[in-house]
Image (cartoon, rainbow, N blue to C red; front, top):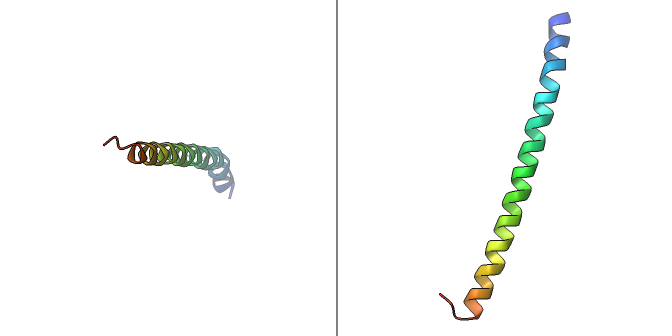
Length: 49
């Protein structure tokens, strides 16, 4: 039981870190997709291929 508690204590920060990193990656990808979409619409409407 003690070993399980130790592994949980070690595992928790790792899981939290993965969630934080994944969250930042998702946010970054969302921003990049938005910028790309806006730029694409802008260039398309101004006839720049």
